[in-house]
Length: 263
Image 1 (tube, rainbow, N blue to C red):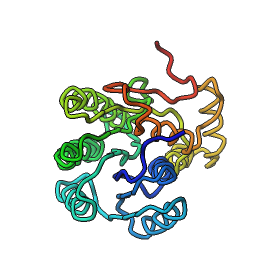
Image 2 (cartoon, helix red, strand yellow):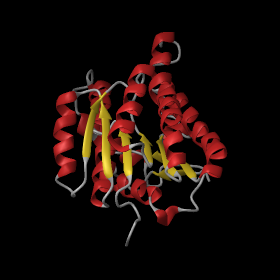
Image 3 (cartoon, rainbow, N blue to C red):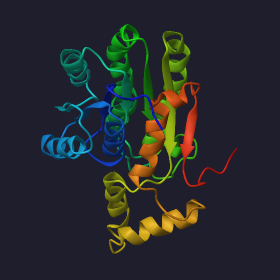
């Protein structure tokens, strides 16, 4: 099936690991040129080599903190310099939190707001003008099932991911007329390094059986009874980026193994 992605330029934040890396590989396999963005330079180079081995496409690795205005601006400038703009933006950079509302300081709320919401705002603001010049584009914001069905131990993550879903809807309202499709994806449990980190934190004082915690969490919450692999989520991202998804606009898609308990 031709996905219509050959020679498109895709920018993926948080692209050196987990869902971001899987999405980058999936798009590269369809012939898209890739710009991955993350903070860890060593991990970025490893990811760049992995992506480059997938297909005969250009792969650029940018070390930047997109939670800052300067970091987001450097990404926009580099993409403009290397490719003259982008056709696809995947706002994927993010991380779980672990706190209660009563003990989390203002500074922690601000850090997550900048990472989950303002990074998407700034990159969109910077890359949309070129998308318009190029005839349109696609923006996908990677949120979380926690935007609609929160987990008790990460209120900041829940709130900022819910804001990202609303941002997606308002972006779609503004940009659809310019042939720029915007959607959000709410994954359920995905076995990423970030989830393993969180599981280790939550079991540190209970024997450290993070794998058991992961297994039990999936069995208790998701009818499918397991965590997803990042590649299973990435396949849907690739579809949403493609010409095959031309009528998918302003929606939020759950990929959660049946975890969502509402309709």
